[in-house]
Length: 143
Image (cartoon, rainbow, N blue to C red; front, side, top):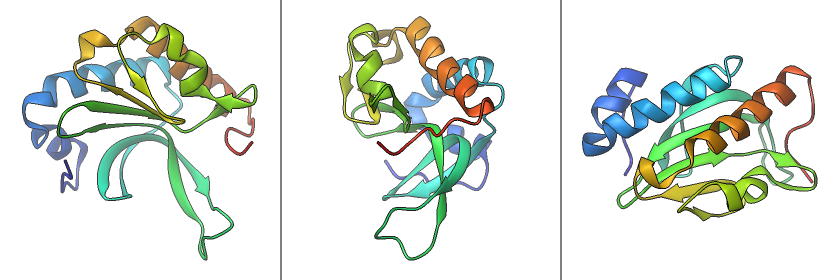
């Protein structure tokens, strides 16, 4: 679900039936990670609401860009919570996966069909860890 939006409010409004769940997840992230500024980010064929844009460049990229430490996005059949951070030698989403609830995890992506499938206390803990480490100036990605 690629949403074309210039503002966060338009992003939510164009999320259709997922709007209320995205707004609730947004509130949890903002509360748990007050130092990660929310901004819209387009890339990899989706628009997402990102938090904590930081400089990012892979070896194959000619120009550096920015990428969010945390992001949320509606998909056709599920919601995605991206946590693009490494913790203790593994991706943080994988580290927290056993406590996240009824989800499917990739390295940085937590997918769930509805918000009630997600353990919100664990999301608060995960996002809070990212916020604390960001404020401390830790290197958050790259193995």
